[in-house]
Image (cartoon, rainbow, N blue to C red; front, top):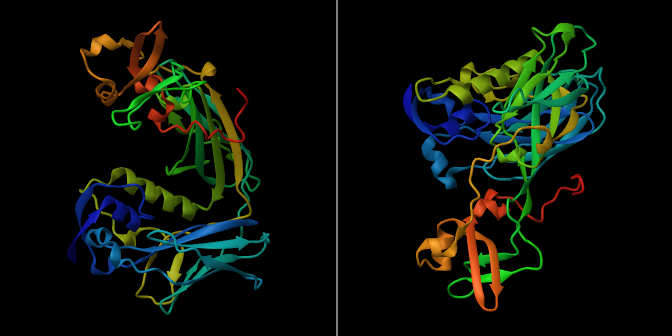
Length: 390
């Protein structure tokens, strides 16, 4: 054993994919637990999939960007009928991404991922493709201060056995500001900034897009008829600006095996609970990938699916309770006690009302969020193609 310093980002890598972590802690890890191959990706019929290959490294190595070695491997999806789908290295970031275009899979054939790297061959367990059932989405809010729950109801599985599912989702939502101002102070215009007048309010409306990295899994244990009924997969707080006007989620459902379910349970537990007192060992992590060199281990789990199912849900603010968690009370210019425009802007204010009547300029200022959607990182020019008309 030796003392290695790891960030949560790296231990999450060791506990499956280096996912969204920043906090440091010290962990007692076996000597062989660095430089392990980490595999992320799944085999899905009739689709283009990405397999990301990386290696586990110590905290010090992560800070030194020049120590990363690209994983120049041969990546293929192989069927027991002799079919082969070859991967192409895209070489992005601190992992090597391999794109594989997969044709229509045969539900009676076993498929596995094969990786040849550094003279070794890594192989996932051969599996028949799983068929994912259809599902429906709905939302629910119990009372005014309760979160909005996004819920899934699955169709019954035909085999009658316990079913396991994983979901991911993409979000889009519209921001509309309390004030629609056609006048904006631009601090970068001229030497000391300038007031810019527009024909229409330029920043009163915008859109935000995000992809979730949460682990969302469930089984039909404790549910009747081997189906999930109104299963809450995630929720949105009643003060969250995602539901301030119109929110949309695109949820993807994929059926998984019990082994893959346990893999994500482990990943979820480590992601939520690691604080420096609990240190998982990579050897404890479930995996269905093995190396022909028995002295080498690998982290990851490759599922095989005939399909995934997607559903989109819209949540308008007229059907839920939303409470804005910031105030939109305009202040007269004089209340800033002689501050110039730039100084007011630097206090996170923008112009809400502006008039110039017979040379008498009257200006009111308000919290920037109340007048500029960009304060939420919303883009006024990014309206999704699928968005309903105003």
